[in-house]
Image (cartoon, one colour):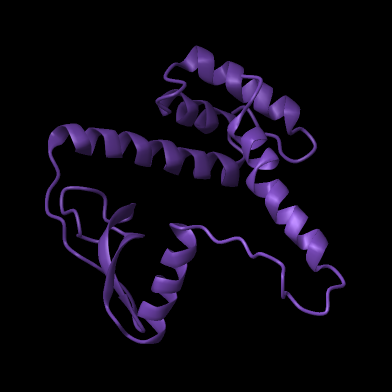
Length: 164
């Protein structure tokens, strides 16, 4: 609890980025300034851009509207599936039906996300509590109310929800 993922990022990757930016400010060129690259995401972003720009149809894991990719799941949900990318966009590969256990996990997550978005748009306290109660890390109305009250207190200058 005293050393979060955010702390780790600030003391490692973020520090590296700021150190490089400091060297780059006012420099005539980037020569002798090491650029950061991620062995995973940096290369992948180049591959994604190439696949789109050069119409390569390379396969990636993509996030896209379900729209029948998983027939026994909400058509409106955003799903993460295999698909190809080319100059016309994302082309998801049909997955087929999912088993009841996995469908239950996905339905729970989808309901949590949808209620969270509705709560924000509608400024609805009840929907926010319901959403948090569905979240697998909270998983109860009592905890959800405590979490939401703390979130609202910390963020009172930015947003408030109305009890209805």
